[in-house]
Image (cartoon, rainbow over all chains, first blue to last red; front, side, top):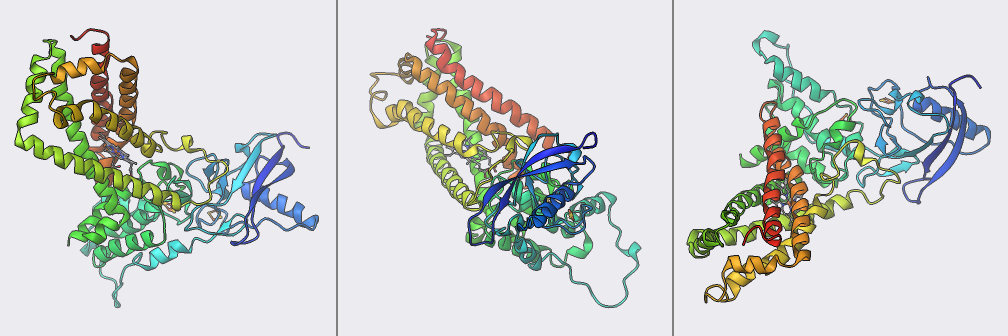
Length: 251
Length: 220
Ligand code: HEM
Ligand code: SF4
Ligand code: FES
């Protein structure tokens, strides 16, 4: 065993499908390099399982560089593990110590049903987006950008909101499984820009209504989502969404 | 409007408005009760209480206050039940302390403690002053009633603990109410947070000092 490598005990949620009950199962992994990412460590474990003829652990992942938002894992009680501002694929094993026990669970929310093991169905987010997370674009040539000046602060706020990758860590972390941070980011990125004005009110109404229909919980402003969001989406967006929503209701 | 109040945000807005209304009540209640600190045998305090008991505006506000509390509690119940339904299977491990304050996660519990206190508190003073003729008949003053109630150390302890619950409820609730209303601003939110922080400490502290000073005979 090379220096600094570690042996770990993993307790991972195993669940055959959405219908059967699941449970935490213990596994041992040996000689894990601190330079591995968390997902690579799971890859090592899966190889071990496959070699033994066992079924590998299902988990979502795609880009492995923090931009797709797929790698949903609730690690030792926190979305995407112990560090802030990153996804699971950006979490390295140097954040753990030799001999640690690591508990890995899927996102838990009625609106994110488990598909298998650590994978959950986040299509509720897609249905919310389909209700207004877009802008109508006219055909023809784009007009000169200088015709629509946008204050730098607004442009920055819209850009920061648009950084949301739809990972669902906000829902997973929230004690109420509220999707407010996600929906607020998606409403904000358009509400702040001229292009978003045409559908501004219907967007706020329809996206919030769909969010409620999907059965996400209600925000109690604990601020946990903001801390755990890998993209640093701020609570200011939720305040903006609340304003957008009640102003749209008054109109 | 009905649609709005059924939405998650509408319920939060109602929660926030009723919460702020209860806060404004606390200000008035705390101010008037502080008259006992004149330590004049309750003369000023009784005059204040007399005024409150006969002023028609105050009596109307009393009804609004009851409606406010009931709305606040009903919304709290609906929201809490919905929130629990939104996560039927709990995490085996959840490290809430890593990302939020315990009192922000315990608003329902703190509110329930406040409610239990409120029932006892109303029994002690509101019931006696409004629903019996003990005070109107001149047999007893509200101040005298207060001195009598706070002779019991267990009741004093109960009032002090209730003020801790109120303090923590407000520590989260005060600034949360503004966030729910969509008032989040780089410049003003830190100010609101600071006012909320001191309000949550000072008001429950003044309230707690009332039974304490009466129990120890500092106010007679
Ligand atoms: C004098 C008494 C009270 C005051 C001044 C008060 C004040 C507040 C305020 C300002 C909020 C924040 C609203 C928001 O986040 O938008 C709040 C939230 C809350 N209150 Fe109260 N409250 C009182 C009594 C109660 C009682 C008796 C209960 C329950 C039985 C209760 C339960 C709750 C709950 C569960 C919340 C959190 C709701 C949420 O954030 O969504 N409160 N309260
Ligand atoms: S707001 Fe943050 S935590 Fe929520 S889905 Fe978007 S990126 Fe993920
Ligand atoms: S795998 Fe794409 S963000 Fe982690």
